[in-house]
Image (cartoon, rainbow, N blue to C red; front, top):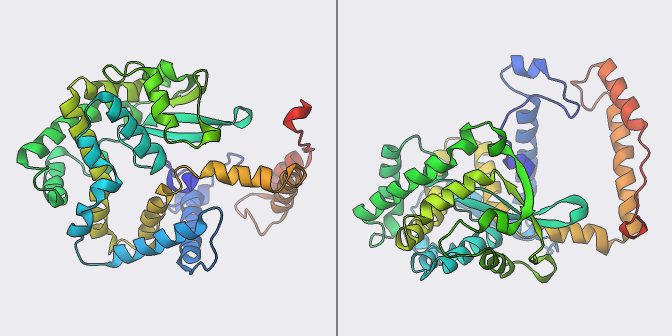
Length: 377
């Protein structure tokens, strides 16, 4: 899901890095063609009624997907339904937060538990032998969430889409949100437009290195406890745990810029940033009706991904522990065998020239796979 939906560049390359000139000449690419095909396959699969509960949560995903498709095709405005969403996305609780400590707890819970991110994104990520690690990366401003070009357009969009909470988002309230969003967007811009190492680096270090100065009076230990409040027991992080930070200078600058304005403005803005997740659903629907089935499917898949925010590790545990080590080892070996056969088959990966196909086949077939259990090292 992440690979399919987070593709930021439409690169025309196969896994060996050879450029597919034919697709580029047509103004398309293998990557985009394959993405559309995969999305279409998922669309057909998720439309089916699931009779039996899937231990991996697939039946929940299908249920959300079908509901989203109904939502996209609906012409009715959902004002009453939207009014209840502040409890789900925790924006109401965020607006009434009594301290920065409570703000941090809500930011962590929204991001990790329900996949709603503010100025930073927090996820659990597999990191090979190190197991699961917390991953922190820059989030999005409201300007980017609402997918508009400038703040004049954002003003008009918010005046309409935040209308389900008229006593909260008054004219002055919307103006305050936009003022805060300008500073957040300015801090986050290097993530989208910059190319320096400080922007793109993945840094591994203790949690304290990245969060100790982000919010006024909030220690790294408070952040750690906020994260552990959400995580299941086997994923909780201790004081020595290493975390992965993506472009830490960017999300640090964004959160610091916000917290420097004080608690009242910070909590109000973060609540609006969460509400923007819901408002975007309503504004997107207006454009999806005539945008084609693929865009509507992509939109609904993105929505489905939210319910899987904390479930990836359960899939890994199911693969490794439920089926036993030997089955897993054989499965890994089978993957390489399948890859070798696939490269040899001229009906698959058809864009490869014969000489490239032969070189790829030779390289892969030379690999001898042995899966060694951790306790044998």
